[in-house]
Length: 256
Ligand SMILES: O=C(O)CCC(=O)C(=O)O
Image 1 (cartoon, helix red, strand yellow):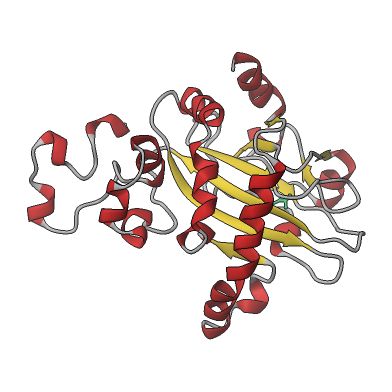
Image 2 (cartoon, rainbow, N blue to C red):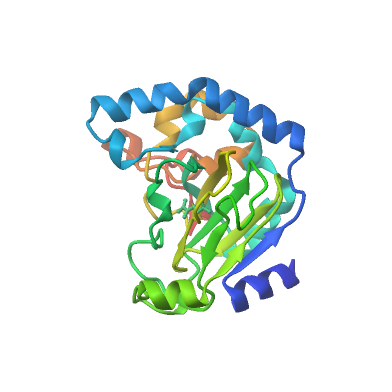
């Protein structure tokens, strides 16, 4: 793992090849496409569908097969080493890059709102559900930009950024401070990715996963998956929930 961590530190990103089988990835994409309308309906009801076209968030709340992706032992070991201990899932969504319309991730951006410098608070991942090439939208990444709080100018970005290409089933990790953008898709075939973003347990999740999935659901999970989904880092909502013996605490001591 040391080599992967070194690459991440020096380049700002690193790729793990062939982590997930084509069969698993295809099953996950099928389940997603069958259920995408649930997300789009809510986006439409709230009047924001045009802002988030081709992107859905917290997709595994409905598409449960996706949870398998969070149980991979190699990625788990890497994440534990990166965070030097406990970590949780902060957010996770699916995005599509098409030839015909724009996805907001194609804008130059970074996903952590407050620059955190070398503090290891947040790590982005991209799981490739499609082969990702320069022609179909592979991510532009400006190596080194993870060390700077300032957004680069468009010219500086596109003159110097590299393309993080890969194959279906590969996983790319990159520093949450890195400025990046999805590319354009010049092909007729849509490109799909899943983006789990991980953080230290004391950073608020973008959706309260333990309550969204249910406390009883947590009891059916492996300890590792329950940890990643935040079941050990919950915030109590009453004094009764707050005053607890150690083993029953909502936010466990192990969470940093
Ligand atoms: O599609 C990509 O390659 C980039 C995705 C991205 O930038 C994001 O989800 O924040």
